[in-house]
Length: 236
Image (cartoon, rainbow, N blue to C red):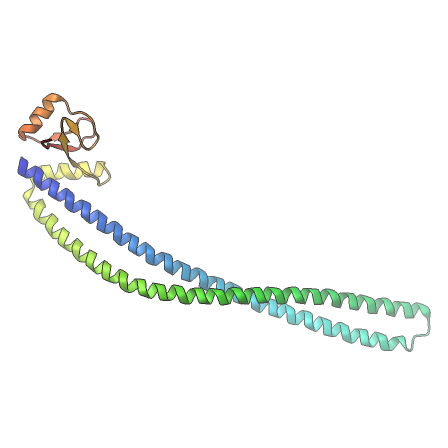
């Protein structure tokens, strides 16, 4: 039974290393995804601001045309002032001219606001482009480094798979089944733990004296009465 327990402990160590490597590979993948996501966000920002610039430029040109049209109307009205015959008509033309000038003042304010928005958008686009260049360079550098590390870890995983298969053939099938079941209960964590000085190292609860005595004889498989892990005696 000692050899069987040693086999299970070896399998557990292999599984622990495999889990660590898989977690590391997942972290590597996430790292790349985060940089790629940042690049995508910058690209989306550039597209949004480019659209905003185009729309604001279109609105600016429309207002500019309105101002020109109003200026032409003002000139015509001023010319008409020279030929009016009644005070009422004269006052009506003056009011029309003032309203047109007032409209143009508002149009000028709106055009200035649009120019500010265009300037802000162009600044955001410029900054985003610089960020994208930097992030793209970072991504290329990290890709090379990560690919190298990934190849190393995947090769190690293949080696561990071979070791795991080898040890699995040495384990008693029923014991191996028990090992897998206990691991699944403990979220793929330790299924085999030592008991030292009558204490289970998995849950830190005392093992009953009779069970602990039987455990030291290594004649059969024992489960911790509290956490249900496979336990074995480890001299203190």
